[in-house]
Image 1 (cartoon, helix red, strand yellow):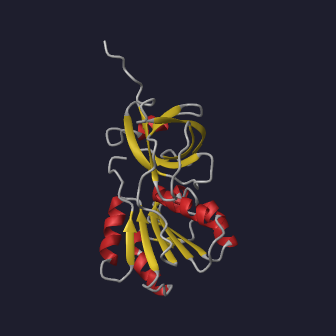
Image 2 (cartoon, one colour):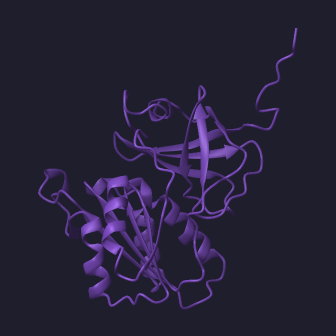
Image 3 (cartoon, helix red, strand yellow):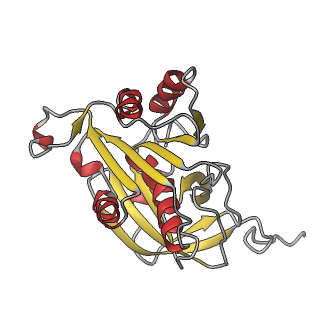
Amino acid sequence: MTQQTDPILKGRFSSATITRRVDLTDELFKLWLAPADRFPFKPGQYCTIGVDGIERPYSIASAPSEDEIELFVEYIPLPYGELTPLLHELKVGDTVTIRPRAKGLFVFNPEYKNHVMVSTVTGVTPFVSMLRTYLENSPRGGDRFYLLEGASYLDEFGYDEEILALEKLHPEITFVPSVSRPDDPRNSSWTGAKGRINNLVLDYLSDTDIPTKDTLVYACGHPGMIEDLREKLADTGYAYTEERFWKDDE
């Protein structure tokens, strides 16, 4: 009889314990994970976590210097979502599996001075990590960050308070949130930008006079937003990069 070895012991997986959870809406929640093993990563990269053998990648909001891994998750019910219904049921003290290495090429690029970060809802996560890391590492000066985030409803902006606070302290950061359903009663108190964020980017680049030279446009979020923005920027001269791990069912 052959002895079975636990995959965690073989190095294929490690584990992480949920230390904190915050529910923003019925569909959106944040998790903080304490990994059992050291988990180095670059700001913008993602971790792959799992429950009962079902795994998905999630961008990390925390900076690499933080002790815990912070995630921003959207609950997608069955039959479309596989992992998020399981994550949605977890509580503080529960554990998930985690692949031992972070992955992803969607990282901060210091070759550019102007960083235009376009996201929808949970797609803001890697940008939060990039901003936290940049600001804690003695900013080199000369960089500008333009964070354009779209959501259907104002309560879907998971990091708006943090980013607005950073904007007040750091003049190099500009935050432009926009809701795509301004007439919905849920947005009755909204006074900011209106419309799908991918439809606002080109006008914003023009109105703000952001040059094509030394500018990189990053996109992360809904695949439809990413595809549309990619097409809109194709002949503009702006350098462009996008997060590619997105799964339609999660």
